[in-house]
Image 1: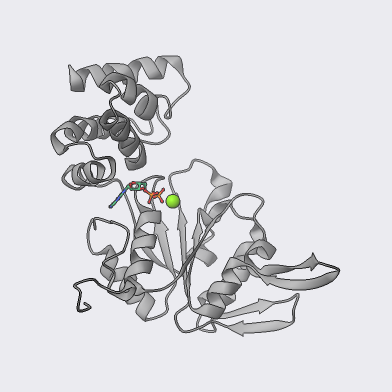
Image 2: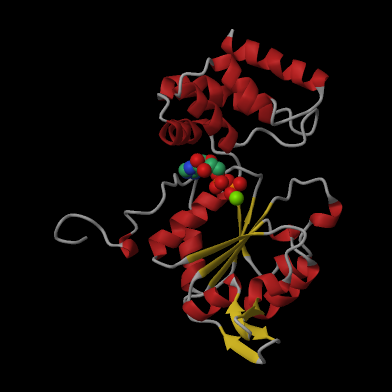
Length: 270
Ligand SMILES: Nc1ncnc2c1ncn2[C@@H]1O[C@H](COP(=O)(O)OP(=O)(O)O)[C@@H](O)[C@H]1O
Ligand SMILES: [Mg+2]
């Protein structure tokens, strides 16, 4: 704490808001202290990205987030030569930058990335902590504060997109799920500005929608979508309309399933 009562960045007072569900902050901090990579498992929109942003700020480390997609290659992470004014210059990718500077590199939805990405991660996630940069001939030893964090969604039905045991067994892993109602209500209220007593039925509805996972819905409604609905309602949109736009339509394209979901809304809101 400084004299004027504010915290510096390392103190974490400026950290993005994150309401802990359990001991995940302690586990993450311990893993970071011991330089162990961390894997966050959980459905989309349950707070993984927010958690990493929060912890990076608390630990006072820069954060490089990479949203992985099926075209993402090792070169995108490591870097490449670019032509600039007739000269070729080397540009570090986000992983290389994090390795050099001692930052957190967060690979969001890591299973989406191309296969050559996991090859790069292996020497970085054992006790060598090295990143071979083939193109420049360098072999970088990671800065002591470098931390690799990855996330993935084990709920996806796509069998090709699960993490291989040889990769997953290199990470300390934390399981995330949707917050319990007593956590989700204050989170949604804070994020949206809608009063808690008005958020409460939205969270109740979310619970019912999540119970349908595996029957009619591939995934339950995310906390992110509940925040969207509450934000629209706080902005003056009628409740029914906001729910349809933010909590029903995003979940399914099937008319019969939608009709079933609307019955649930009626059951909750009367
Ligand atoms: N525990 C939490 N504390 C604060 N906000 C949360 C929490 N869980 C979910 N949220 C909210 O849900 C939104 C989506 O979370 P996000 O971290 O983007 O999900 P994920 O990365 O798991 O897909 C966040 O922007 C935030 O508004
Ligand atoms: Mg995310």
